[in-house]
Length: 149
Image (cartoon, rainbow, N blue to C red):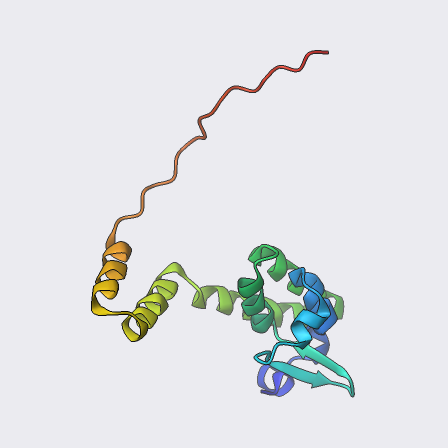
């Protein structure tokens, strides 16, 4: 994958492994040991990760909010320039659009069909067909305890 020519974007807009690890809340060595990372060489020793790859890793590690990671990516690209920011924002939007609840459910069903026995598959299907209960309008709990001064 050639990030620079595919996206018409300077590789400077993407974080290197150290910056990406910081955005994700993991160590650099955690990322450098992964065999499934899609990175691009920038210079002789520097490897960079595209925004979609950083977001994929954020979903795996779950150390930071996906929105916070996306904002850190945008901030990093902004340091390079407004055009870079626009490209990275578009990448992030495309990634968010591809990871909807419906797409995640479809992926779950695909995996269930491939990996589960028919009875277990029927349970998964039935679970996904159940309507989701609406969230509570307000949180009900104990009243706050008054502080004695």
